[in-house]
Length: 388
Image (cartoon, rainbow, N blue to C red; front, top):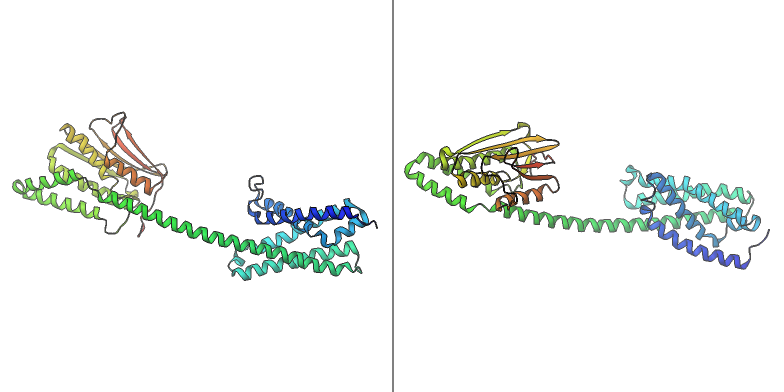
């Protein structure tokens, strides 16, 4: 057998050090390796595992073993081929058995210590099952190297397993801290949204309240029954606005009811100058929309229709299914929307509520053709459940 030269040993040791650093780095980045280049998950993991096993096993070469035996007896070609064959067998058998234990949903329910002990034991046992037969094949059954193969296999598998466990523990800790921060940010976002929604709910058009109270004062002298009816309707509207349950959503049924209460108040005020029609798909009654999403639009229609022109105003309110969601439509026969619409507080509040509660899942449009209408398309249906 030809012994490798001193220069060959020095080169090999330097190369092994580089492979050790590369192996540890790749092991830490295992979940990200080849993520964009290999789509098949199982193939990607096996390729990454092969590369890591090759680097780590190459880094252990200075400790001796089959590589040096083959190098001295057959030269570099056979030594490298043996290393490649060993790495491939370790990947196909050892890695995949360890992966099954690591990813098993049933075993994941065990404690961290028990689960990782099973992973470590599987790694050591399967490494011995692979390396001992290879040792017989390379050295022969009576070779003193077989004892070394056993010890080296346990050492290599144990060291790799412990490094894996440490990295896994650090990942879990990092994820736990990240989740805690995300939870805290989520709570802060919820508080911010709640504060914004509370502010939107609490603001009632002061002109409407002023005019309604003036109308009640006048009616109390001329028509007590109408004054009483208007007072009850106004009380219902404000009771709804107080939002005792602190819900940000309301059912379509309740929103329609409140829009009707508002229109009832305005009809009492303007008598025969206001006509209303409401059409609702009954299957949508128990789905959720933001609180007070319809009343500002109806109020806008009254304000820019009847109050601006003094003519008979027709308001049609419709809730219907549209594609996967629902459409809320407020139509009136008042003046058309200007080309450059400058929305007031009511319309802005509607948009803000939709933006907070249905982000990227709604459309708000103002149309003059074929009818003058405001359309809210909510793309995501949310069924009413207590506590929302």
